[in-house]
Image (cartoon, rainbow, N blue to C red; front, side, top):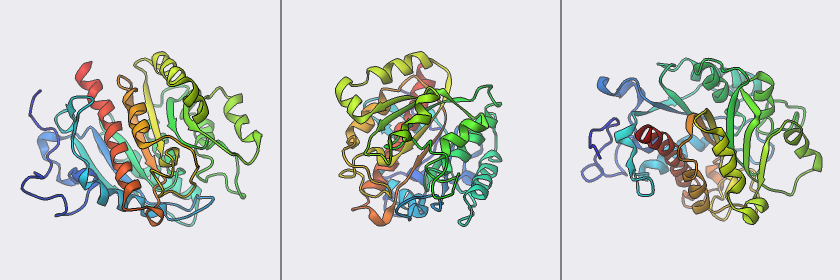
Length: 326
């Protein structure tokens, strides 16, 4: 494998990981990327917003916590046999501006920031939340930067919750509603949407209605336990090489492994299962992504924040592997 670097990292053998400014996984700030590494393949930015939560607040501090914990995320993947810094030019693009007092206006502000990041024809966007409402903005920006594909993008969604509730407590733009709003906007195609890890209990059986009526493929945690990855593999095979968006809510992972989240749902996948499921997606083309719902105040020893950093890494590996193998 070539040792030519697309991303320059501090040398951990001479500059320890506890020293220097914190950026996502030690990737350079966007404005400091060397000219030979431009345009970047992925711009990773924080979306420190949590006014869309329906239970515990605090995920506005998620991007900061993930930056700190992710100093220990290393660039070489053993399972994929790839160093992502050789395959991808990566950068921390800072934080999007937010409006903490208005969910809909906040969605517009983050969308405008993401839309206007440089090199829209080349650079892909990863948003780090913040609550799941921020996914709408990054999905919309990704859809536009991909040329507004008719019918919307396919979506692969890891979560304990479907997030297709029309309104919660009078709010239509909360973290319970990003995908119903994205479907309404034409940014994602619900018939090509896979939701993995869904589990209960729910407020009511009708919480499942929208997804089922609109053709979303649902893999509950119990279904995953019973059948393994059969439905997931079938979805990925049918998707083929079509560009898709990937959204990952940390609460899909059992709170025994990821306690730092605002809507914990008991009885979920382990961190190892999460990595294995992401690695099974190798071959898909991820054109945008987000990792959301890390709540540092409820975390234990940075376990959740560090796990989120590794989820980011596994998503980036998917693009690195696709570029290597195509």
